[in-house]
Length: 249
Image (cartoon, rainbow, N blue to C red; front, side):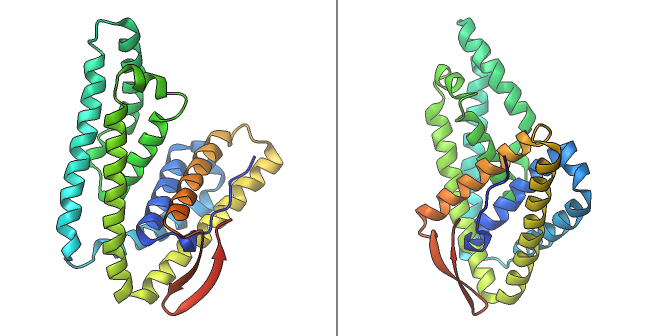
């Protein structure tokens, strides 16, 4: 068992930030992994914060208003889904009440996603949707008749990502060298983290790292699918006049 490969330069700016946001979150929640690779965790967080902050200072753009509106739509859908689950706790059917109880435990573990900063919220919504569509929770969602709500939350989150990427690309076009440097720094540390965790599995066995690797690999698979659907399976990556042919492996 090991962390899969993903070609990070092929990710668009918004997807790139979101990917690393999710990985940072997984590390923060896994005490074993965090302590074992502490020497890499601190610089990884620092490098990602520098990259994320770079896009936060983007000047007002025509896309900003659309982003704010889409975020509001996403917040309302998240709240509506959570409220639908809460309502299930009062259902006359014991089976439905149990399904609602199970899902509310998951919701509580995520907290108030709608109150988080843009990038963090996007990563959390992606993770929540993946969890709710997994074998563990999909039957509960079906019992609560909440699949349409969940699908709509996923759609709004994807549309939000597309808008964020549009705005980030506007900024990246004005500051290509700085964006390239920060992206490379974050990616290099992530690759070292991947090697370190895979190495620990080879030495100690997978028991202590299986859950972390499973979450990372689900995220890797998700972003590979995103690249495939946007035509990024094999493309020329052009940033600051640097061109490289890279295949998503």
